[in-house]
Image (cartoon, rainbow over the protein chains, first blue to last red):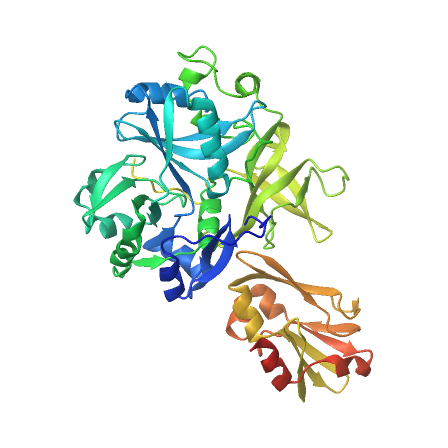
Length: 382
Length: 121
């Protein structure tokens, strides 16, 4: 969780009153007062999401419309390609793609989703980065695009094997959507944007809804016995089991997409020899790493014992050496795995699955094995 | 037998010169689901306020401090094999360790049940 670095009052999402009425335990997160858990607790909330469906308030995240001044979405897509190593022009209408804003060193300023809504691009960015992202977009794309933060919209995530049946009661077309489809839909008669995606490794949806109707929609979903409200605690353990990066922890301005093992998200068209190679911040570094490999890699880690290995624990190549080889960037306990799990950076020579490394925890060296991610298989409807 | 409490939400059951130590029900409710417990080695000499045990929930790790000075006589392996016991019976079966009380004078600084209830109210 992010530490608060200022004393400005915490913001509230449109669902704040609902969280309080549901006895959510409210904590500061990215400048917002957010529920970290409800009465069942992180473990049960996590397992319920994997078994049925969980409803998450992610309204703290940023939603941004990017429109081409020319009116042609191709121009907005080509403009956005100046800031990300992804193929945005190739995102078909009604589809979305995972992307990263990079800096001149090839580091990651934020990670985001980019959807093609037919006449404009719809971006979802991290809460802690949203103001900086908006400024970055305005600063770099204002020649070609208008940037409109959609502050009057809330964002709900409905995740888990029962998410489709729960949402289908309010929106007839969701059954026809597949993983990473995204676009405007009427949900319970409200003007929503629905994507079939999420941050848990489960099938599920993210639903952008006008703020004034967010509580009404959340309540309509929660009357379904399959759906429970889920806090940020389980959101974190679910995404960790799914092997998904948390910005500010597993990825940041000092990690490149290749070091972060996110090269799958960089399409051929933006690589050397592609139709539109480079042309994004840090391209020189990132293209070189795509060609030659990065010196370090983000890997999954499974502690061999029962002790969780937390973020910040130094990693060592053996039980005795004094020089760390890397650091754990996320770590905890996976309720579905019923075991501790972690992610971290290690030298490329130690990144192969099965490699034994050691973490220092409370003065002891604990063995971990490099493991494939996701730790828990994902269930996306492709 | 007397039960005493610390402001760090630990309880001590005093039986002669032996204190049995655990965390309170309030502490377990604040921690959430306990998934891992690490206990001190039997025979270890603990100083008052020294980190003696670790209790971890899904989200975070917390230290359990030695509330008084003394030698560890016995530890409760039931909670290392079944950490969820800490949630279900914090004040009873889920005791952490027993300590030989080195200085009974240290007990004077601890709370009785009424004072602890007021502390968590």
